[in-house]
Structures are given as C-alpha cells and as structure tokens.
Length: 167
Image (cartoon, rainbow, N blue to C red; front, side, top):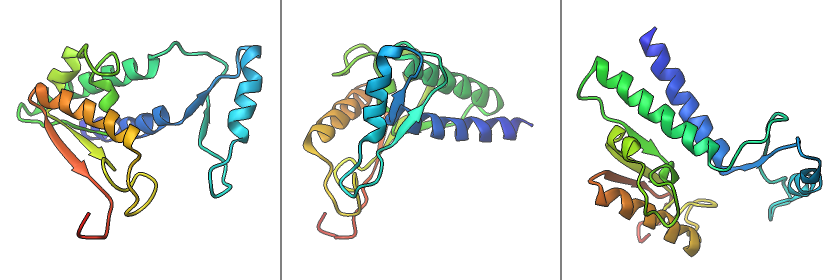
C-alpha cells in the first residue's frame, strides 16, 4: 500500500508539473471567454493546436498550483523519510517552486529542506527538438533558478537532448 502511495504521488507530481507549463484556461468568468477561445485557436509553427488545459468552472488564484505542488513535495519527502531516513528526492523541471518570485529572491525554506537536488531538461539544447538550442530568455530564467538552488547546497542535474558530440 505504501509503495502504491509513492507511485501515485510521483505520477501526480509528473502530471501536475506538465499541467503547470501549459496554458490554464478558466471558463467561469464571462470576460475570460474571448481570451480562452483565442488561446485555444492558436497554432504552433507546424499548424498543430497549442497545448491548453481546461479547468473546471472554478477560477484559481495566481500561484495556486505552485503552492499545492510544493506542499505535495514536502509531504512526499516527510512520508518517505519516515520509512527510510536516507531517502533522496530530486525534482524534475519544477524550478519555479524553489522561490516565491522571479528572479528568485525569496526561498521556500520548507520546500528546499524537503529536496536534495533539482533536475532540469533542455537547459541548453532540446527545448523544441533534438539538437535545437533553448531560447536565450528561457536559458536565463532556468539558470537563475539553478544558481539559486546551488546557493542552498542542492545538487543540479541537467539533461540536454542532442546527438552532436560538439554540443
């Protein structure tokens, strides 16, 4: 039963992080409907619809998902360390949870105590495909969060997607 809890928590973590990265739409306020339709109608360069996540009729306050995600990670860490004190927790692509703001200045202390390191995909290459560089603005933001984590003694693990050995 405990293993099932950990598996479901990790699965939830993964899906929650990816939901945070998409456009979150709320259909409750009438004033938002036009904007939501516009977002849903957007297409990427290949002509495919861009990702958009429809939420139920409830509007969420800014930062709600980050706060809930941080709480889940803290709880997961506590439960895991009860069973095995040497449990290591490394988050993946969740760097915005490290701080309450951007650029990162105000740390989430309980969250930082709960994790051992952060993993980041596509820091320099692989953002929009194999061997394709990550946009400079996004690199700057990601590096700011990773440096912030390093200041607190967290491990930094980076995965870039490229075939060319020179990259």
